[in-house]
Length: 282
Image 1: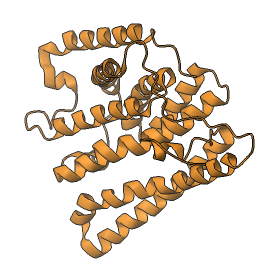
Image 2: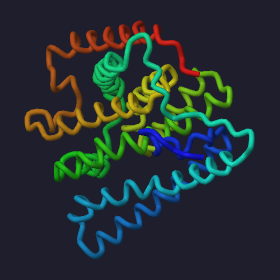
Image 3: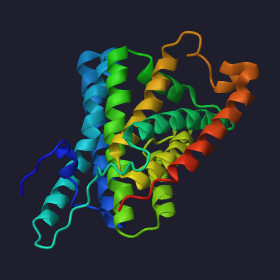
């Protein structure tokens, strides 16, 4: 079968729509990849030192973490593709009517930023983050800028959206799971792969919106754009001297916090009202 078009990467996986057993397989191989990535970081630390590992270890370890589940999904997809009655399920459909792609792109970027502020309000009630974890997370966004940008703004949207929306959510939707439960499960899954509650809570909140957008449009381009917007905004804040030491938006905005919070809630509501016009992609 010939493979053409701009999304050959997506087409590699379109015959594999995992349900529960397939998702467990993806989780297993993701954990294997995480161990391999950790091993690479330890090797870099041993031979080049801690500073080199912090600056450049993520460039290698992060993609390595996703290689095993990608190989697993590609092999499963290829096997199913060879069957006579095989029917593919594209990861990228781009169902933007009647709003159009450019308007959808603008809307999802706005709602991502607004939802980020709202999720910060919820996260602020969590107990204080352990110092070691806080330092580890800061190292991901406050080190060498081009390294941070590559890992946080490019790698994370591509790989995490492929896994959480392109594989998990698409698989559940294709297998007949009700959208509300498929979106919720994929959002929780998205939260869990961050492996700590302080990232998990905002990831689940954003994951619900990412999942809703994917259910409506079947567009990984849009969810990757949303992920890119959120992570790049966080990266910009971490390199802004007046804001990088702020723990939450209440500290940063002061007396403007509550009006901004209300405006963000309104923007999220208006987003859902507008996106209702899009009929879910089949």
